[in-house]
Length: 345
Image (cartoon, rainbow, N blue to C red; front, side, top):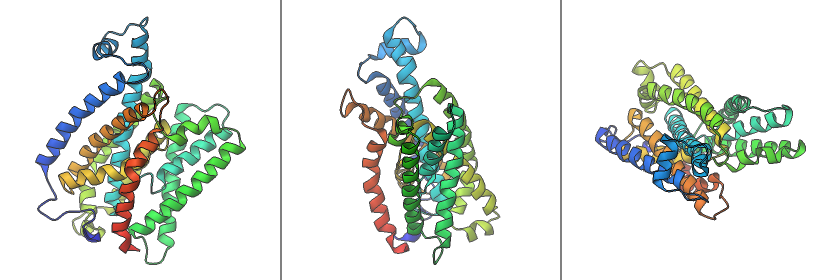
């Protein structure tokens, strides 16, 4: 596949509503099954009937019900909304930049959020969940701005590979500074959860902050999906069709910062979901973002919930970092895309 076709298909494949309906139907079904598995499986296995009783007829004196309600249900919901948020963020970034390698983890958004979270832990005596989320929003914007600034200063402007290289460099830089801050101010233990990436320690307060922001971001993403489809065909084409390119890019960037900031604030650095999922979905449903965005949300949620289940089953009773599971899937995919897009250098 050539560079010019990396993000859009030909006219025969640009819109596949039947395929999208199938993806949504099967995806939602398997997502519900995966959420049930996430609640059932663990160090203490709990049968399905107990899960249903714990959700609909909670008994505070039951240890199993306490595990379900206080630990596993918020964990499953967090994985669902984080996966959906990261996948949709990646889809929007790829559509706006027309860059097959764009994703929150590669374009500096995730590392920027982690950088400011480490600052919050180092310099603020009492860090609340709301403060962490606000700092994550600011850091996500900072990381993205640095990547695009460096890419814009290079010769021949922004190419997909240059953006990816700039993103990798900024991510490494901010990651190193974050580690230095954590060691210097003795907060490494406090932020180790965010470095590893995962939803093991998620509580209801985290879910209550995550879900409203994620829902707002997902609604806005769907609202601009048609404009992103046109923009993905090129700025000249979009302008010729009457699109306000600057406004669409600005709103899309805000959506990405909302979704990624909330996801990182709750789940830490979980990479490659935003890279892999949109490509898989685009291959199935075509290049219309009115289909890509809702399908990416469902598939991203499914991928992260299943990854979380795998993370806790690989080496019980210890848990593998969720970020490591997604990296195993994402790194080979990234290398494949980088090789394919290498001509853009």
